[in-house]
Amino acid sequence: MSAVRAPQTGQQLPTRLRIIHGAGAVAFGVKDNGFSFFLLIYYNQVLGMDAGLVSLALLIALLVDALVDPLIGNLSDRTYTAWGRRLPWLYAAPVPLAFAWAYLWTPPAGAEPSFLGLVGIAIVVRLLLSACEVPSISLVPEMTQDYDERTTLFRYRALAGWIGGLGMMVLAYTVFMPGAQGLLDPDGYFAFGVFGAVVMAVSVIGSALGQHRLLARLPAHKPPPFSLKTAFAEITEAFSERAFLILAAGAVAAYVNQGLIFSISNYLNLFVWQLTREQLVLYPLVLFASVVLMFVVIGPMHARWGKARTAAFTAVAGAAIGFAPYALFLIGAWPPAGSYPSTLAFFAFLLFANTLGVVSMVSATSMIAEIVEAFEERTHRRAEAAFYSGNWLIQKCATGLGIFLTGQIIAFSQLPANAAPSSVDPAVLTRLVLAFGGSAVVLALAAAFWLIRFPISRQEHEARLARLVHHRAQAHASPLDEAARADPEGHSIGA
Image 1: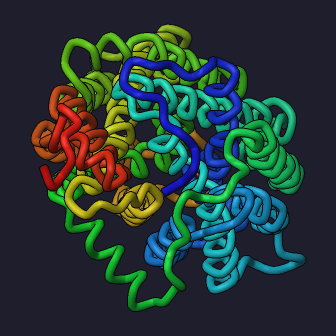
Image 2 (image 1 turned 180 degrees about the horizontal axis):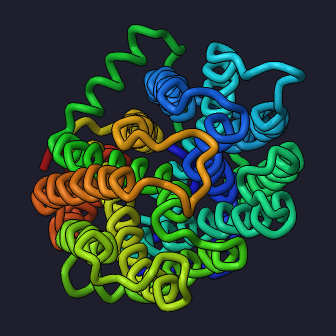
């Protein structure tokens, strides 16, 4: 167990520490935004690779990365250095990650991109990002045991991640690809990659430095030597935790839906809503406003309904609000696409739909922290990184399926390559919207069905913490202490 002393229930961490810890998630936001919003359209519409092949390459990379993530989590839990369990990872991985990220956005010289080349570099980027994010996010259960404070830390992580991703989106629209062709302009993607690489490295290393004094110490216990057999046994044991299995079932549907929505957004914005370059600049600002709104409302929602009910309700409500504009578009009750009334109405629906969607995802992520103590009570062993790497395994596999699903929806709709937004056949748009909307609503309902069944409430978590405190006190008590408890009047054992 780490030597970082977790504040007890009701105690709060300093705001400065919350911000510094959350800043490490900026790198994840840059990566997630690039993969979800730009990579498919860049390799498909700009470089000319078939959309189905691009989505397949990204799916393969995600699956390989996801299978390795639990090993990264196990290694992080077992790391034993004078700088603790997590800091060595946060110092070693960011620089190689930056170089790999920049290379991903380097166009091939005089040729179409290679399918195997895309698979390879995508795997490298994702593995190095995992080596940053898994140790960083695993610090949350170590830093605090408080039910609400954990949500606060994840609020800051979510806000920082969205700032990183949306900041890159704004720069893409206004600085890196500002010409008449917009996102279809091949120039600027390399600069987009290089700048993002610098942001990634600075955010992770800066966050680690800011937490160094708190975390840089030997863990309390030295783990046994690493072996694959032991690692897989520990991973299997952790993943068999009932609460984790229930959460995982809901997370699969939620992350598939997230991957679908993110990766298809640029297609919908360009071809359905026909957003101009100026309107596209407002799009990330609306998303950022929705994350700020999440930051404000999630705490009161958890206080009233708890994490599980909040996650389930907002998953369904967000999907319903998000699909409403598309339903109105299909029945002809929507203003002309590209007009200001259309754009403003779409942004209004987007604001609330994305707020609820982010509330659901942050709630589910925060729920994982409570599984750590449930596992500790059952096995007397903590495995923070194992559970968060398991969540990443689910997220990456499911997000990859979502991106793959986007590629298949694009192919099913028969959207032509290099198409002009205003010249697409309405029948193509109808197929595109129906396939997207139907998939999103079904996935949201499936996610809510499982999330509402998560078995750890606030009351159960706090009762478990009390039991763990009692157990730890007994485990560390000296024989004299035990004798004193057995004979409170101070009589000798042989009296």
